[in-house]
Length: 340
Image 1 (cartoon, rainbow, N blue to C red):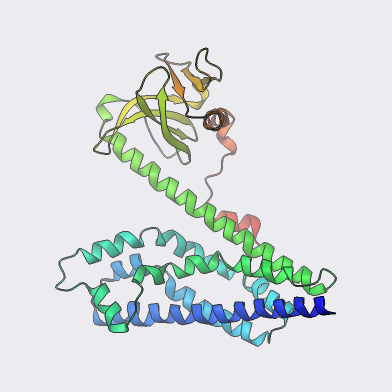
Image 2: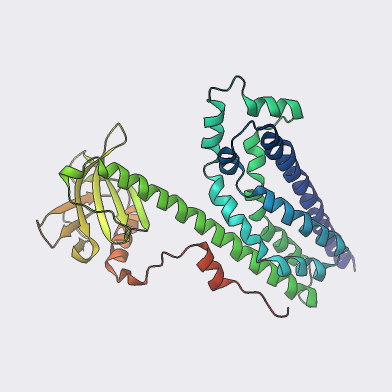
């Protein structure tokens, strides 16, 4: 009996945490939208472009979150009703994907605004006017933190909901949906960062257009790995980039540009895993055109295993590699249930 009371008490604590943190979150969103975004728009202090870059679709998230908070309140601390709030709205949480991707650039926009030629630092000025001790960036990160926290709250709720209760299966369903959503958003963020990096690599290679015929065209859509490796037997370091269809070997210059050394298309790549005298070494060989090879050395057996695996992966049929975006992933993994 005491154990049952203890579990019930903990379950009620989690329910309170879900409601109170959601209410606090919505209040913070309101401050960002009303006191920063709409204030600056109304005063025409920031351009529309800067507002979009800085705040993304936060207003859309605020409007949705107000409705979601109201639904949680109407659940009246009832566990299955709380689970239904998440299950009925899980598709609407997709709007967070746009915000999370846009958020990657918010720090750069804040720096650009701060360093602009405006008479005063408008961000610090507004922050002081509102009595906010935390910088704007600490508020802008809240939606990112919140969307990645929902599944953790539901996991706690499931832990204190008896497996014999029908409530438990509903909470687990809600947890599964939100956990999958968090995973897809993280994967989308990582993919976006890699796409940005490929663009950077492409731009740096353009500076060396006359020195190489390497073409980072649109079929180079996926960055598998990137890092520094030593040339076995020397102290020379090379920067190795594995794309979905080629191995690119460069030398990173102090100015940030990449000095081209070689590239090997995946279909022409041979990997020799064991090199005599170099237990941490492996050799990559080109079987086409001007045949050449590099004997590269990792820092540890685990690192060597990683690089060899990544190189072997790109030798496999790349036609199955997906360049699909968030929408396609959502269509694959999510659906609007007819009944729950």
